[in-house]
Length: 182
Image (tube, rainbow, N blue to C red; front, side, top):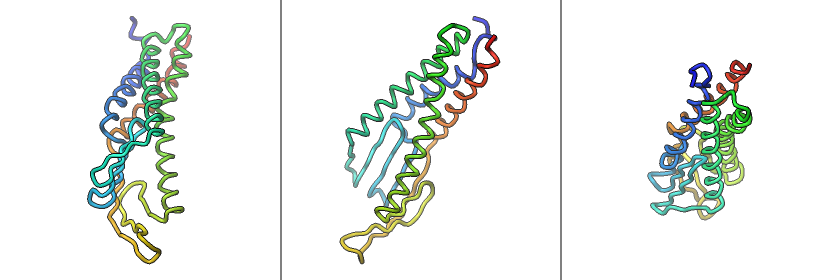
């Protein structure tokens, strides 16, 4: 195998995408904590954990979306890795076009979904949940005059940034492919 015939951006993007899946199974991309452990949300495109006072909840439909995301990202990582090792083969262009977009879509759609959910919580429920950072959330309780005020912290965890790196490497692989074409 000639070193010149390898798309190193694609190889790095494919391996990083697979590493991202492995890491994201147990480590969330984003965490929202309300109160001192009263309610916690750990979210990523791969896994969602809702924890209310020590009780973990699973929503079957979201679990199915997470499973589909795992499978798509895994297929993307494998496709990019195979493409990168053999970029001049007849099937390589199709592998590249399938694989390079998925990590980017995962990061963009995940971020857009978080922004939409925090906006919906504010406009419909009247709860000011931060997208990033901390705030004091007033949660209506019982009636209109009673409310509970709790510290709310939202943060992006390091796998989110790894997802951005994976997406960037995959896009760089697509751009670099033009230099490899005869």
